[in-house]
Image 1: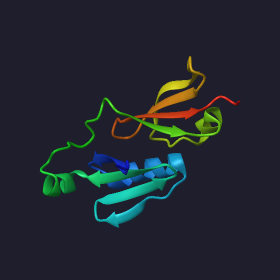
Image 2 (image 1 turned 45 degrees about the horizontal axis):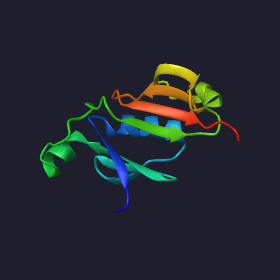
Image 3 (image 1 turned 180 degrees about the vertical axis):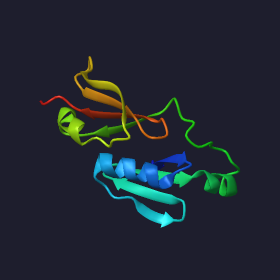
Image 4 (image 1 turned 90 degrees about the vertical axis):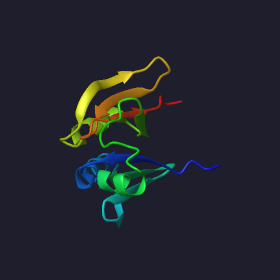
Length: 123
């Protein structure tokens, strides 16, 4: 089995795609009306419009309803990222050094999903 992607369901694909493009520097590939992917090294982030979920997935995933998963992105220096954050990013926790050594910044995307941007300690 191969892990393929994480998909976020939203009522505003363009707004969410813009947020993650700005955060990651990776452009969204619009593969269909209401669907795009950001193909990052190691994982793909898919973004789907609510109406596609209603039509093709029996309405199984409501838009902007996630409060338990955390999307995690590793960067070289989390502190250096702060000035370039998307303006729509809600900072939940300023950069903090975790007990295991990672430096972590917690954000919420425009739909409220929790995003952890972190850097690992230098060896």
